Length: 81
Length: 181
Image 1 (cartoon, each protein chain N blue to C red):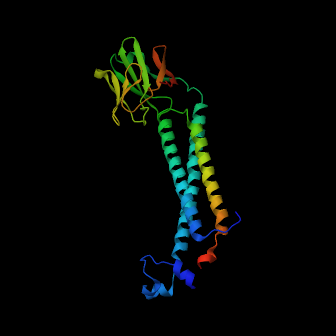
Image 2: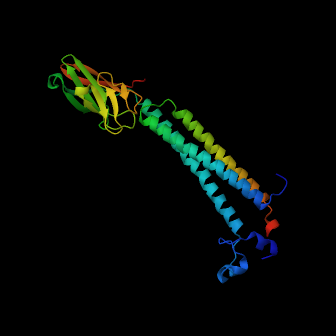
Image 3: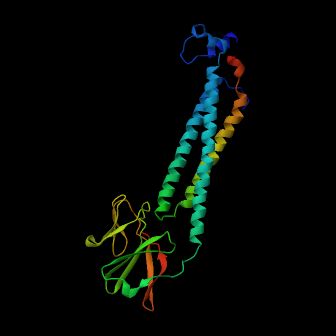
């Protein structure tokens, strides 16, 4: 990212990332609930696929966090100060 | 504070800085920046929350793998055959002490044993001999008494069957047969 971002632009990006992260965490919560319910009921057919999906969600969240961390120094805070 | 900073700094009550109480004028806060930092920290917290979720999922998978590779449990004596009344029900634990099971003897020559844990959420099922079924009182799940297959309610999988064997007049539990629908 070469051009600097205004604080408003950065806030919009942050809010979008927050929404995405929230959605992914809720997805993981649902996945854990469904896996536990199935496993306690004796169905272990989807345990590893659910674990892989959860890991993918975790990696996506870490990726979004890294993107946020990378974008933040680009924010032009002087513009409004 | 310069002019542009004044424009971007809006107090929570929305009034201009000149109408703010003296303490807020003395210690102005850059509210948009404060909100930005709060949201960024919340995002970080949420993103890090997903790591324990993933770890728990992997933990469940590993736990299941260890359970599967434990092998078939060893045979365990339940009771002498003569002590089991026809039409009666006997509770026993197999393969471990915390695995409750039920033994039924509907007639002289038939012996049936099932795990007592409901396949929905693990509540203890109770036999309803007059209705020829097992009842899970937690969510009104019903299982067939002769096969353990689910009849109605939330359970979708049959009760695990305990295989039985008679050795010198004594009834033994020899294994757990997980049934699939």
